[in-house]
Image 1 (cartoon, helix red, strand yellow):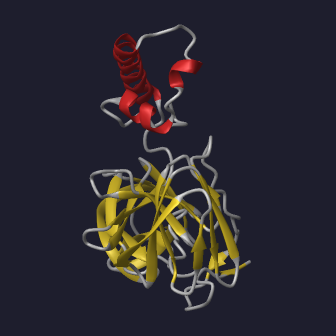
Image 2: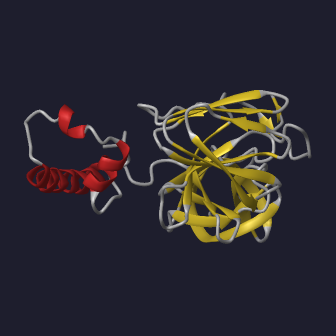
Length: 276
């Protein structure tokens, strides 16, 4: 189910019809339309409930990005683990910490107080609330969870995947969602299963596609131009570099190079600069 992201759908067959219309050909037994939909819907819904019971909920620190075209803003949904491990340089004065989420050095949200198991090199913080949504001010800066005592930061951990290079590389969002909260499916060059894609590209980019329908939209978010693509095929975005985006792929693929080191909080081009 994870391939087509059916776990959170109340009617998973509708999503399967949209993302994989030929699913009946792959089903092990022949089904007519009405019987097949009802049977598979019940099967997938039950499987989703059981998977949620056995899945390690809140086991890792992660985030997802969403574009809100009506308000022309970007939100990041952050998932915190039940127990968050953070490295410290010295033994803290207390086991009670105030947790907050920062974008670079800017405070975005307060997580609230938390208690931890403390050692000389590591604290393990018990997090009460696992989901937070932050409206971004500068997506080119990494998000981090900061633990403080008495207003003084003690330690911090960066949230993986929290940087979006808007205005530097193309960033794609699944615009098939009627709720107008579009999920980010990749940046730079990537492949996605979706067939309705809104692409945010740098101002000076040349965008083209021989396979998909192309419409430039009259919106501007974070100094980018918005283009909408429909169909299956390849999209090219060229400025100083050439980026290739494929719509309607069999599987999604967006695996950027992961750099190990310290993210420097200075204005640079490209926006993400690491010392390692």
